[in-house]
Image 1 (tube, helix red, strand yellow):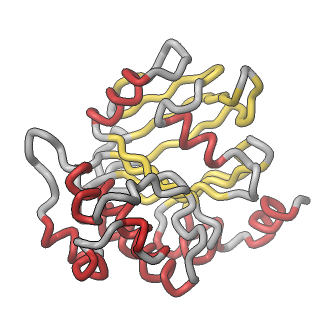
Image 2: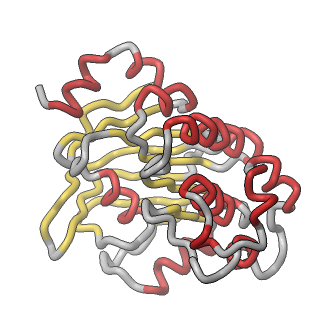
Length: 243
């Protein structure tokens, strides 16, 4: 990891229709680091990711991706989102964002950069071997686990430097989550990408994360190493169930 983080969020306040959902968020993600963003439903996790991606307007604070401040005009535009993607930001939304009428292989081709430099397919299939037999199948016909693998594969095939993953386990059996979370660890370690992941399976994600942030009602209530949070079940309980 280099000293300069791939993502630096300082005092971020963001929301919808001018109403703040998250307040004064501060977080960092380093190169090759997996950072877990945790909290109960409605805590502001998805809004945080959307604000980083430029899909939700910020109301205050700064967001720096790879040493460059983003969408300073505080409004959502296609140009801002496109520019972030070109700089190496990939976002896997909670609905996976797949094109269900296209095959798995066609979805992957959409993730490849135009000027080359894509992760080789053999490496993609090393991380996601279950995709090999279904590459010619339409994404809409894949199982939930296969769809999530495809969404992750499409995001990483373009070699992102910052990967945002929202609710990877949504609708998946725990055994699939146990298989996929270590893959995120491998991707961060092997490619140097910084990964910010929202996940409800707290013990599992803390097992592969370097650091963690806990949100409650739009505020950061814990920032530290994953091991430190693992050792404080009282903080986790308060974050999810209230004090």
